[in-house]
Length: 41
Image (cartoon, helix red, strand yellow):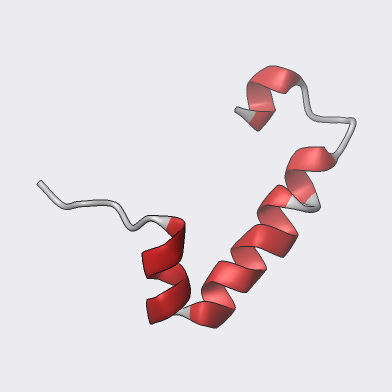
């Protein structure tokens, strides 16, 4: 079974990917009011 990367490890290995994940997914898409709480989880 593969281990998933935590945020710190991702930030160390692929800093730009970690930055975009934070900004786009957590900062933009999941904050949209059109998404129900279920769709955000």
